[in-house]
Amino acid sequence: MRTRLLTIVFLSLSVAIGGGGCSPSSSSAPRINAGGATFVNPLLQKWSGEYKKLKNAEIDYVSKGSSYGIEQMTAKTIDFGCSDAPMKKEQLATAKEKGSDVIHIPLTMGAVAVVYNLPEVGEAKLKFTGDVLADIFNKKITKWDDKRITDLNAGVPLPPKDIVVVTRAEGSGTTNIFSEYLSKVSEPFKKEIGTSTKPKWPQGVIGQEGSDGVAGFVKGNVGSIGYVEILFAKKNNLGTALLKNRDGEYVGPEADAVTAAAEEAMKEKPTAEPYSLHELTYSLTNAAGKKSYPISGISYAILFAKLPKDKGPTIVEFLKWAVSDGQQFGKELEYAPLPEDLRKRAQERLGQVTFE
Image 1 (cartoon, rainbow, N blue to C red):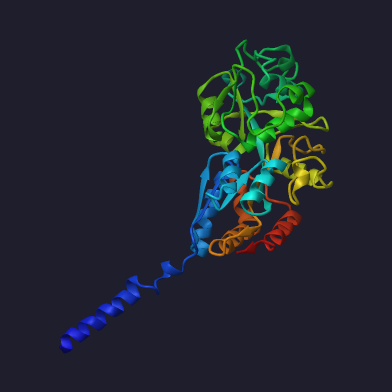
Image 2: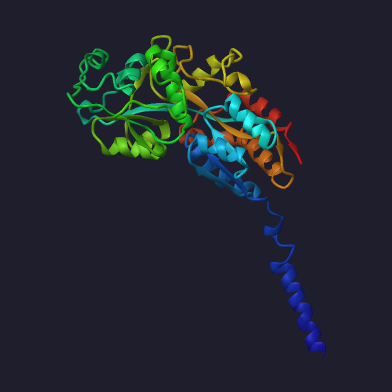
């Protein structure tokens, strides 16, 4: 009998120590599911790993485009979405019917690079003005040796090849930033195509899924041109263009040039939708300033202002960390850190989220 009692006590202690309610795993934070923009995906993956080490919290992020992030956040199939395009009035109304008001939290900033595959030009950086780039993507300029391109690139051996135009196939915040820029610098583009996460491109334009898809297609097809976040351009060793900015300077897609664009854009409160609909959203495209890169953008976390009690605190604490200590991880991935004032305001806004 004494032996049996000792065995029972031993087994009870084993369960309590090794597999019962006192184990570390049982007290870990809930798993958070997020998804959306490819723009911020490399940084979200980095943040996820770092935050797990710091807080033992799981942040799973699915990179399927900004439209996916908004749609799935609204449907409550993910805990928060990410988008480079702020939500429009009708999207906000739909979300409010499903849950509550929606807030936008800026996470990071970056450049959308114009990439191309032209072995003939070697190490030369092609130059484009906004109107020439708009007419390329509107299929009005169709040859690499078109006079409007050669005039901008004197001495560069541009071949008499067809220009193969590549865009994102799915709803994309990167596309929204790119088409917003082209709409600002070209009235014909604005009228015929306009700003959208998924524009109706002219016939002959090739669509690819995700920034990896666009970058991979350009890398594998001589004569092609597309647009991707700068990290995808560098990962694939693609040529990146210099763009003439609003002040007449040719600037490349570097982090400092994105910061310069943000500093200019934040000097004034946005008056145009969708930026005017939110507290912390800004258009960085075609910003003033000699150092500004004209196709710059901000990627946002989009979430309900009222969150569930079980997951809400973890979501808020993760995003607070992302816009503060997490900013240090952006530089190695070619992102520009948020300005200090925007970081502070983002944390204050997150502090207003309620749980129910």
